[in-house]
Image (cartoon, rainbow, N blue to C red; front, side, top):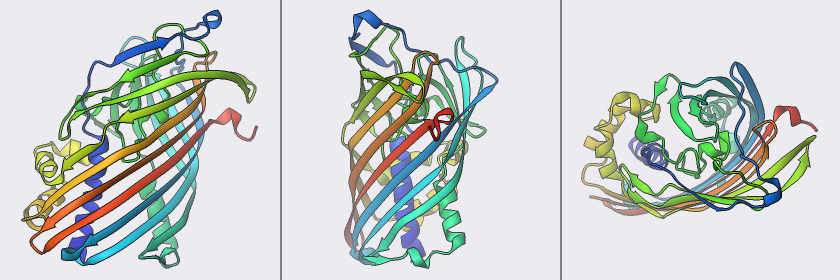
Length: 357
C-alpha cells in the first residue's frame, strides 16, 4: 500500500512540476491591439517603494477530484477534496539589481483553514482527521516564500524560492499568465499584470504571447489577453478594471521520460520544486520498472479581474479563477489503469488599507 500511495503521490508531484517549474526565458511578444480612450491615455506602471512593505488579505478556495481505475495497483476508487484558506500576504520591498527594478519578498500567514469536504469512494473521511492532521494539511497547503525582481511594468526578471535562486529556465510566463501550478495560477495573480509601455485608457487591449519550447514538454502555445473594461471608485480610490484571459494549449507528457530528465537536474533545483532526488531514483528503479505512464491535461479556464490604482501604481484587489482537467493512462506488468482528475481554484487578494471598508 505504501508503494501505491507513493507512486500516486509522485505522479501528482510531477504534474505540479510539469506545469510550473520548467519554463525557459523568452523574448515576450507584446501586442497592443488598441490604446482605448484617447482622451485619457496614461502609461501604467508599478510604484513599489524600496524599504517598505505592503500587506494584502487573501482568501483561496480549491477543489480537487480524482477517479482511479488501477486493476494492477489495488482496484478502483475516487477521491474529492475541497478546502479554503484565509490570511495575509506581505511583500517586503527592496531596490532591485536592474535600473528601475525592485525586489519583492512574499511571505504568507494563514489564520483560517477549512476542509469543506474530503471523501474517498463516496465516504466522508473528514471526521477521521485529527486537529494535528488538519494543521499539517494547512501547513502543506501554505504558499512558499518567494522573492522576485520585477520591472516597473510588472515583468518578472528574477525568481527565488527561499534562499534558492531558480535557474533562468524557470521564469517564462510568470509575468503574464504562465505555468506556475496545476490550476494555471501564475505569479500574475500574486504580483499583478504586465503592463504595456504605451499610454492606454479605458477600452485598451493587449496580448502577451508566451509561446515557447518548454524543457520536458516541447513546443507550447500560450498567451494572455488583457482588457481595460472601465474604471470605478473602490474603497476611496479611482481604479482601472483590468480583466484577463489566458490560453494554454493542451499538453501531453510521458511521465517516465520526464522522470528520467529530472534525474539529470541539479539537487538544488529539485529541492526547490519539492522533489527528493533519492525518491525519484527509488521510484525509477523499483516502483515504475516495466511501466508506462502518459498524462494529458487541459487548462479549461484561467480568467482574472484586477483593480489597479494608476495614481499609487499598485494592485488594490484581484480575483483569479482557474480550472484544469486531465487524465493519466498507466500500463503495468499486472495490467492497465487510468486516472482522471480536475482541479479548480479561486483566489482573491485585497490591499490591507481596504479591508473592512
